[in-house]
Length: 384
Image 1 (cartoon, rainbow, N blue to C red):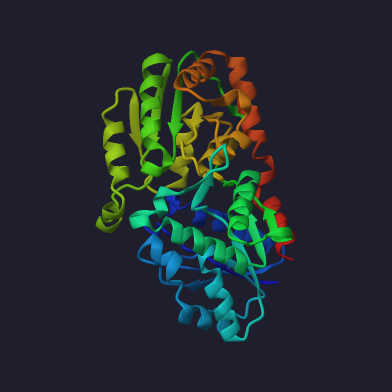
Image 2: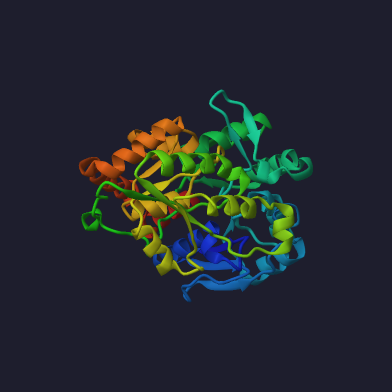
Protein backbone atom coordinates (compact mmCIF):
# COMPACT_ATOMS: atom_id res chain seq x y z
CA UNK A 1 0.00 0.00 0.00
CA UNK A 2 1.42 3.39 -1.04
CA UNK A 3 0.44 5.99 1.56
CA UNK A 4 0.97 9.71 0.98
CA UNK A 5 0.68 11.58 4.27
CA UNK A 6 0.02 15.32 3.77
CA UNK A 7 1.32 16.99 6.92
CA UNK A 8 0.77 20.64 7.78
CA UNK A 9 3.53 21.63 10.21
CA UNK A 10 2.42 24.78 11.99
CA UNK A 11 5.58 25.19 14.09
CA UNK A 12 8.50 24.13 11.91
CA UNK A 13 10.90 26.18 14.05
CA UNK A 14 9.59 24.47 17.23
CA UNK A 15 8.91 20.89 16.17
CA UNK A 16 8.75 19.66 19.76
CA UNK A 17 5.68 21.89 20.23
CA UNK A 18 3.92 20.54 17.12
CA UNK A 19 1.86 17.51 18.17
CA UNK A 20 0.85 16.79 14.56
CA UNK A 21 4.50 16.40 13.57
CA UNK A 22 5.25 14.26 16.64
CA UNK A 23 2.30 12.02 15.74
CA UNK A 24 3.58 11.59 12.16
CA UNK A 25 7.13 11.03 13.39
CA UNK A 26 5.89 8.12 15.54
CA UNK A 27 3.25 6.74 13.16
CA UNK A 28 4.99 6.81 9.77
CA UNK A 29 7.85 4.44 10.76
CA UNK A 30 5.32 2.10 12.43
CA UNK A 31 3.26 2.03 9.21
CA UNK A 32 6.49 1.25 7.36
CA UNK A 33 7.20 -1.60 9.79
CA UNK A 34 3.71 -2.94 9.06
CA UNK A 35 4.48 -3.14 5.34
CA UNK A 36 3.17 0.16 3.95
CA UNK A 37 5.23 2.35 1.65
CA UNK A 38 4.95 5.79 3.24
CA UNK A 39 5.75 9.24 1.90
CA UNK A 40 5.37 12.26 4.15
CA UNK A 41 4.74 15.49 2.24
CA UNK A 42 5.76 18.17 4.68
CA UNK A 43 8.03 21.19 5.17
CA UNK A 44 10.36 18.92 7.21
CA UNK A 45 11.05 15.16 7.06
CA UNK A 46 10.30 12.72 9.86
CA UNK A 47 13.25 11.15 11.61
CA UNK A 48 13.14 7.67 10.02
CA UNK A 49 14.98 7.66 6.67
CA UNK A 50 12.92 4.66 5.49
CA UNK A 51 9.98 7.06 5.19
CA UNK A 52 10.07 8.92 1.87
CA UNK A 53 10.02 12.72 1.97
CA UNK A 54 8.32 15.14 -0.41
CA UNK A 55 9.17 18.74 0.61
CA UNK A 56 6.31 21.23 0.67
CA UNK A 57 6.04 24.95 1.38
CA UNK A 58 4.45 25.65 4.77
CA UNK A 59 1.41 27.95 4.76
CA UNK A 60 2.16 31.34 6.26
CA UNK A 61 -0.93 31.36 8.51
CA UNK A 62 -3.40 28.88 10.01
CA UNK A 63 -6.09 30.22 7.68
CA UNK A 64 -4.02 29.66 4.55
CA UNK A 65 -3.60 26.06 5.70
CA UNK A 66 -7.39 25.73 5.56
CA UNK A 67 -8.38 27.89 2.59
CA UNK A 68 -5.35 27.76 0.26
CA UNK A 69 -4.27 24.09 -0.14
CA UNK A 70 -2.28 24.76 -3.34
CA UNK A 71 -4.03 22.82 -6.12
CA UNK A 72 -1.16 23.03 -8.63
CA UNK A 73 1.31 21.57 -6.15
CA UNK A 74 -1.13 18.82 -5.19
CA UNK A 75 -1.68 17.76 -8.81
CA UNK A 76 2.09 17.62 -9.41
CA UNK A 77 2.63 15.68 -6.19
CA UNK A 78 -0.09 13.12 -7.01
CA UNK A 79 1.22 12.56 -10.54
CA UNK A 80 4.73 12.07 -9.18
CA UNK A 81 3.93 9.75 -6.24
CA UNK A 82 0.85 7.87 -7.57
CA UNK A 83 -0.50 7.14 -4.08
CA UNK A 84 -3.13 4.54 -3.26
CA UNK A 85 -4.07 6.35 -0.04
CA UNK A 86 -3.82 10.08 0.67
CA UNK A 87 -4.01 11.17 4.29
CA UNK A 88 -5.44 14.68 4.65
CA UNK A 89 -3.99 16.00 7.88
CA UNK A 90 -5.91 19.23 7.23
CA UNK A 91 -9.53 18.15 6.82
CA UNK A 92 -10.56 21.40 5.14
CA UNK A 93 -8.22 20.55 2.23
CA UNK A 94 -10.02 17.29 1.38
CA UNK A 95 -12.28 18.72 -1.38
CA UNK A 96 -9.23 20.23 -3.09
CA UNK A 97 -7.41 16.92 -2.70
CA UNK A 98 -10.34 15.11 -4.33
CA UNK A 99 -10.32 17.59 -7.24
CA UNK A 100 -6.53 17.38 -7.61
CA UNK A 101 -6.65 13.57 -7.73
CA UNK A 102 -9.29 13.81 -10.44
CA UNK A 103 -7.15 16.22 -12.44
CA UNK A 104 -4.02 14.11 -11.94
CA UNK A 105 -5.81 10.97 -13.08
CA UNK A 106 -4.99 9.17 -9.83
CA UNK A 107 -7.51 6.93 -8.06
CA UNK A 108 -6.72 7.04 -4.34
CA UNK A 109 -8.59 6.67 -1.08
CA UNK A 110 -8.81 9.93 0.89
CA UNK A 111 -8.39 9.52 4.62
CA UNK A 112 -9.16 12.55 6.77
CA UNK A 113 -7.36 12.68 10.09
CA UNK A 114 -9.15 15.03 12.52
CA UNK A 115 -6.09 16.20 14.38
CA UNK A 116 -7.95 19.34 15.41
CA UNK A 117 -11.65 20.20 15.73
CA UNK A 118 -12.59 23.85 15.12
CA UNK A 119 -15.65 23.48 17.37
CA UNK A 120 -16.91 21.75 20.50
CA UNK A 121 -20.22 20.94 22.14
CA UNK A 122 -21.39 21.94 25.60
CA UNK A 123 -22.98 19.46 27.99
CA UNK A 124 -26.37 20.69 26.78
CA UNK A 125 -25.57 20.07 23.11
CA UNK A 126 -24.80 23.65 22.06
CA UNK A 127 -22.21 23.87 19.30
CA UNK A 128 -19.48 26.41 20.06
CA UNK A 129 -16.91 27.64 17.56
CA UNK A 130 -13.27 27.46 18.59
CA UNK A 131 -12.15 31.05 19.25
CA UNK A 132 -8.71 30.18 17.85
CA UNK A 133 -10.34 29.86 14.40
CA UNK A 134 -12.77 32.74 14.72
CA UNK A 135 -10.70 35.85 14.01
CA UNK A 136 -12.89 38.48 12.33
CA UNK A 137 -15.80 36.02 12.38
CA UNK A 138 -14.08 33.34 10.27
CA UNK A 139 -15.14 30.54 12.64
CA UNK A 140 -18.37 29.71 10.81
CA UNK A 141 -16.54 29.52 7.48
CA UNK A 142 -13.88 27.24 8.99
CA UNK A 143 -16.61 25.00 10.39
CA UNK A 144 -18.33 24.74 7.01
CA UNK A 145 -15.01 24.06 5.27
CA UNK A 146 -14.28 21.36 7.84
CA UNK A 147 -17.63 19.65 7.28
CA UNK A 148 -17.17 19.93 3.49
CA UNK A 149 -13.85 18.16 4.01
CA UNK A 150 -15.55 15.39 5.95
CA UNK A 151 -17.93 14.89 3.04
CA UNK A 152 -15.02 14.56 0.60
CA UNK A 153 -13.25 11.85 2.64
CA UNK A 154 -13.59 8.09 2.18
CA UNK A 155 -12.47 7.52 5.78
CA UNK A 156 -12.54 9.87 8.76
CA UNK A 157 -10.24 9.18 11.71
CA UNK A 158 -10.65 10.81 15.13
CA UNK A 159 -8.75 10.45 18.39
CA UNK A 160 -11.47 9.59 20.87
CA UNK A 161 -15.11 8.72 21.49
CA UNK A 162 -15.72 12.34 22.46
CA UNK A 163 -14.23 13.54 19.17
CA UNK A 164 -16.31 10.96 17.27
CA UNK A 165 -19.52 12.16 18.92
CA UNK A 166 -18.77 15.84 18.27
CA UNK A 167 -17.66 15.25 14.67
CA UNK A 168 -20.75 13.17 13.88
CA UNK A 169 -23.06 15.78 15.40
CA UNK A 170 -21.44 18.70 13.56
CA UNK A 171 -21.57 16.84 10.25
CA UNK A 172 -25.22 15.84 10.68
CA UNK A 173 -26.25 19.46 11.28
CA UNK A 174 -25.08 20.33 7.78
CA UNK A 175 -26.43 17.24 6.04
CA UNK A 176 -23.22 15.17 5.93
CA UNK A 177 -23.69 11.60 7.13
CA UNK A 178 -20.46 9.90 8.16
CA UNK A 179 -22.00 6.45 8.54
CA UNK A 180 -19.45 3.64 8.67
CA UNK A 181 -16.50 5.70 7.43
CA UNK A 182 -15.74 7.11 10.91
CA UNK A 183 -13.06 5.34 13.01
CA UNK A 184 -11.53 6.07 16.40
CA UNK A 185 -7.73 5.78 16.12
CA UNK A 186 -5.86 7.45 19.00
CA UNK A 187 -2.44 8.98 18.49
CA UNK A 188 0.60 6.92 19.53
CA UNK A 189 2.51 7.77 22.69
CA UNK A 190 6.08 9.00 22.26
CA UNK A 191 8.41 6.02 22.78
CA UNK A 192 10.98 8.37 24.33
CA UNK A 193 8.55 9.36 27.07
CA UNK A 194 7.73 6.05 28.74
CA UNK A 195 8.64 5.13 32.32
CA UNK A 196 7.74 2.07 34.39
CA UNK A 197 5.68 3.10 37.45
CA UNK A 198 7.82 0.69 39.49
CA UNK A 199 10.65 3.21 39.13
CA UNK A 200 8.59 6.07 40.58
CA UNK A 201 9.02 7.39 44.13
CA UNK A 202 5.91 9.08 45.59
CA UNK A 203 6.25 12.66 46.88
CA UNK A 204 7.12 12.99 50.55
CA UNK A 205 4.58 15.56 51.65
CA UNK A 206 5.30 18.11 48.90
CA UNK A 207 4.67 17.64 45.19
CA UNK A 208 5.65 19.34 41.96
CA UNK A 209 2.94 19.70 39.33
CA UNK A 210 3.71 20.35 35.66
CA UNK A 211 1.61 22.21 33.10
CA UNK A 212 2.96 21.31 29.64
CA UNK A 213 0.40 22.86 27.30
CA UNK A 214 0.39 25.79 24.91
CA UNK A 215 -0.35 29.05 26.68
CA UNK A 216 -2.92 30.32 24.18
CA UNK A 217 -5.99 32.05 25.57
CA UNK A 218 -8.28 29.41 24.02
CA UNK A 219 -6.52 26.67 26.01
CA UNK A 220 -8.07 28.20 29.13
CA UNK A 221 -4.76 29.61 30.37
CA UNK A 222 -6.44 32.36 32.39
CA UNK A 223 -8.46 29.68 34.18
CA UNK A 224 -5.28 27.66 34.79
CA UNK A 225 -3.52 30.74 36.17
CA UNK A 226 -6.35 31.19 38.67
CA UNK A 227 -5.98 27.56 39.75
CA UNK A 228 -2.18 27.81 39.89
CA UNK A 229 -2.41 30.58 42.47
CA UNK A 230 -4.74 28.48 44.61
CA UNK A 231 -2.57 25.37 44.37
CA UNK A 232 0.68 27.04 45.43
CA UNK A 233 -1.10 28.98 48.21
CA UNK A 234 -3.34 26.26 49.67
CA UNK A 235 -1.62 22.92 48.91
CA UNK A 236 1.91 21.58 49.46
CA UNK A 237 2.56 22.07 45.77
CA UNK A 238 4.97 23.90 43.51
CA UNK A 239 4.36 24.21 39.77
CA UNK A 240 6.48 24.01 36.66
CA UNK A 241 4.97 25.68 33.58
CA UNK A 242 6.41 24.82 30.18
CA UNK A 243 7.26 27.60 27.75
CA UNK A 244 6.72 25.56 24.60
CA UNK A 245 7.18 28.34 22.05
CA UNK A 246 10.17 30.40 23.12
CA UNK A 247 10.48 33.52 20.97
CA UNK A 248 7.69 33.57 18.41
CA UNK A 249 7.69 35.48 15.13
CA UNK A 250 6.13 38.98 15.04
CA UNK A 251 3.47 37.63 12.64
CA UNK A 252 2.32 34.97 15.11
CA UNK A 253 2.35 37.42 18.00
CA UNK A 254 0.25 39.87 15.99
CA UNK A 255 -2.34 37.17 15.25
CA UNK A 256 -2.54 36.08 18.92
CA UNK A 257 -0.40 37.74 21.63
CA UNK A 258 -2.01 35.76 24.47
CA UNK A 259 0.88 33.29 25.09
CA UNK A 260 3.30 36.10 25.83
CA UNK A 261 0.85 37.84 28.17
CA UNK A 262 0.04 34.65 30.08
CA UNK A 263 3.70 33.67 30.32
CA UNK A 264 4.60 37.02 31.83
CA UNK A 265 1.79 36.73 34.38
CA UNK A 266 2.73 33.18 35.38
CA UNK A 267 6.42 34.07 35.64
CA UNK A 268 5.64 36.60 38.36
CA UNK A 269 3.57 34.14 40.42
CA UNK A 270 5.29 32.87 43.58
CA UNK A 271 5.65 29.11 43.58
CA UNK A 272 5.59 28.87 39.76
CA UNK A 273 8.75 28.13 37.75
CA UNK A 274 8.90 28.64 33.98
CA UNK A 275 10.89 25.97 32.14
CA UNK A 276 11.78 25.23 28.54
CA UNK A 277 12.96 22.02 26.91
CA UNK A 278 14.59 24.14 24.16
CA UNK A 279 13.32 21.65 21.61
CA UNK A 280 15.26 18.79 23.21
CA UNK A 281 13.13 15.69 23.81
CA UNK A 282 15.56 14.31 26.42
CA UNK A 283 15.39 17.54 28.37
CA UNK A 284 11.59 17.37 28.13
CA UNK A 285 11.66 13.84 29.52
CA UNK A 286 13.82 14.99 32.42
CA UNK A 287 11.41 17.81 33.21
CA UNK A 288 8.52 15.34 33.30
CA UNK A 289 10.55 12.93 35.43
CA UNK A 290 11.22 15.76 37.91
CA UNK A 291 7.49 16.32 38.44
CA UNK A 292 4.95 14.29 40.42
CA UNK A 293 1.72 15.02 38.57
CA UNK A 294 0.40 16.80 35.49
CA UNK A 295 -2.42 19.29 35.03
CA UNK A 296 -4.70 19.08 32.00
CA UNK A 297 -5.65 22.19 29.99
CA UNK A 298 -8.96 24.00 30.48
CA UNK A 299 -9.72 23.87 26.77
CA UNK A 300 -13.43 23.12 26.18
CA UNK A 301 -12.84 21.73 22.69
CA UNK A 302 -10.10 19.30 23.72
CA UNK A 303 -10.69 16.05 21.76
CA UNK A 304 -7.24 14.73 22.73
CA UNK A 305 -4.05 15.99 24.35
CA UNK A 306 -0.66 14.57 23.54
CA UNK A 307 0.78 16.50 26.50
CA UNK A 308 -1.59 14.64 28.85
CA UNK A 309 -0.50 11.34 27.30
CA UNK A 310 3.17 12.35 27.72
CA UNK A 311 2.65 12.73 31.46
CA UNK A 312 0.67 9.52 31.83
CA UNK A 313 3.14 7.41 29.86
CA UNK A 314 5.79 8.67 32.29
CA UNK A 315 3.61 7.43 35.16
CA UNK A 316 2.46 10.88 36.24
CA UNK A 317 -1.16 11.13 37.44
CA UNK A 318 -2.94 13.96 35.61
CA UNK A 319 -5.62 16.05 37.28
CA UNK A 320 -8.08 17.89 35.08
CA UNK A 321 -11.44 19.61 34.69
CA UNK A 322 -14.46 17.37 34.17
CA UNK A 323 -15.05 18.28 30.54
CA UNK A 324 -14.86 16.80 27.03
CA UNK A 325 -12.31 14.07 26.34
CA UNK A 326 -10.63 14.73 29.67
CA UNK A 327 -13.72 13.39 31.47
CA UNK A 328 -13.67 10.37 29.16
CA UNK A 329 -10.01 9.53 29.68
CA UNK A 330 -8.75 10.72 33.09
CA UNK A 331 -9.54 8.63 36.18
CA UNK A 332 -12.68 9.96 37.87
CA UNK A 333 -10.85 10.41 41.21
CA UNK A 334 -8.57 12.98 39.55
CA UNK A 335 -11.30 15.08 37.91
CA UNK A 336 -12.56 18.30 39.46
CA UNK A 337 -15.27 20.89 38.95
CA UNK A 338 -13.94 23.58 41.30
CA UNK A 339 -10.59 24.94 42.42
CA UNK A 340 -11.31 23.64 45.91
CA UNK A 341 -11.66 20.09 44.59
CA UNK A 342 -8.44 20.45 42.60
CA UNK A 343 -6.57 21.60 45.70
CA UNK A 344 -7.86 18.61 47.66
CA UNK A 345 -6.78 16.17 44.93
CA UNK A 346 -3.32 17.77 44.64
CA UNK A 347 -2.87 17.69 48.41
CA UNK A 348 -3.79 14.01 48.54
CA UNK A 349 -1.33 13.21 45.74
CA UNK A 350 1.36 15.04 47.70
CA UNK A 351 0.70 13.40 51.07
CA UNK A 352 -0.94 9.99 50.47
CA UNK A 353 1.73 7.69 49.03
CA UNK A 354 -0.64 4.77 48.44
CA UNK A 355 -3.15 6.98 46.58
CA UNK A 356 -0.32 8.44 44.52
CA UNK A 357 1.18 5.11 43.48
CA UNK A 358 -2.23 3.67 42.55
CA UNK A 359 -2.83 6.58 40.21
CA UNK A 360 0.70 6.51 38.82
CA UNK A 361 0.06 2.91 37.75
CA UNK A 362 -3.37 3.77 36.35
CA UNK A 363 -1.93 6.69 34.39
CA UNK A 364 0.71 4.49 32.80
CA UNK A 365 -1.82 1.72 32.09
CA UNK A 366 -4.12 4.18 30.29
CA UNK A 367 -1.44 4.53 27.56
CA UNK A 368 -0.56 0.82 27.25
CA UNK A 369 -2.52 0.43 23.98
CA UNK A 370 -0.94 3.53 22.44
CA UNK A 371 2.34 2.02 21.28
CA UNK A 372 3.16 3.02 17.67
CA UNK A 373 2.83 -0.61 16.50
CA UNK A 374 -0.66 -1.01 17.99
CA UNK A 375 -1.84 2.36 16.66
CA UNK A 376 -0.40 1.64 13.19
CA UNK A 377 -2.32 -1.65 13.07
CA UNK A 378 -5.56 0.17 13.96
CA UNK A 379 -4.75 2.85 11.39
CA UNK A 380 -4.20 0.33 8.57
CA UNK A 381 -7.34 -1.58 9.56
CA UNK A 382 -9.34 1.66 9.24
CA UNK A 383 -7.95 2.67 5.84
CA UNK A 384 -7.83 -0.68 4.05
